[in-house]
Length: 403
Image: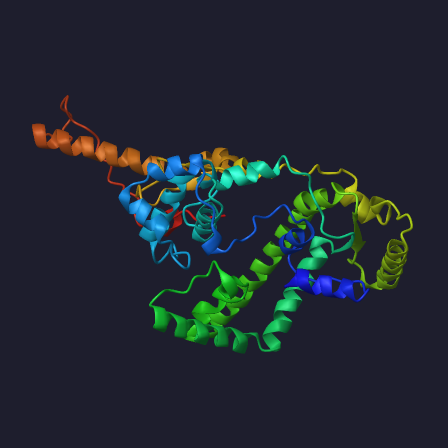
């Protein structure tokens, strides 16, 4: 829709201005060959030799699932078996791509399988092909990134949440829940907080409050929404600096400038800078060096980050299963390679090891007791009894979750 609207504006000899949208959305709008396009299911390509070989190795149940993929991704908390089976299907077809996703991240897992079904190729091979393709930009573009120092931004974001609540956020969330309740009643499927509008910040945070209407749950929900908003802002800034800006720098017909919006007293100066740059851009004149605009711009842009090849994403978040922390083989405990060393030192991992040792010790004691009848009377066969109860197998802290 956006591309059609932009084309229509250009046809009228006007200049389109894009405001808002996530950096990920903007990236895919500006760079045409860095996203896999959807295809018509009726025009899907037949599987190539590599995909066909993988299909031939599927079990009958997996083949049936591949031929009848779910219309929506299963919810891991409500449908763990379906979620895990979907991930195992991806693992059987494309192990390299499956290693990138947590088994609970059913939305991305399902999308990767759909891509293979539509394009007739392994999803990992499609990404690797992009390494050989020259990065293409759809438009000659000028990009402004308004950036506020984090300490100031956090305060503004908290105020924004408070303002949203005052302006009727609760009514809006309640309306969304009413729609969701109707969907659940009609389909029998639980709400999926990982897809569509239901993944929006503010929806899941107010779930408990809408059930209880208590002041404590309300305050908890507001605080949770503020934390989620601040966390998302950090993520967006990292994405801009590490992924989006390197792509802009890699093409000749796009330029990006950082506008320091930390101090509102400086806005008139910032506005004048942006107007001058835009005027020069539209006139085809030379533009200033982006890092020379402000001290903040120099800090953010002085060390250019080279755009990674698309295939780098395959190993960037590769998951490893911790055999010690996995309680159920059908619900593996996964962490990324980057997090692996930290996980081995974590309290969760160390407590699990300790609990296993206690269970082994107690088992040895029981076996010895049953065979000798000796408990701890000082004889050669006596053992010390560990009276510490084992860690609860259902301890919530032990469950792993996607990133």
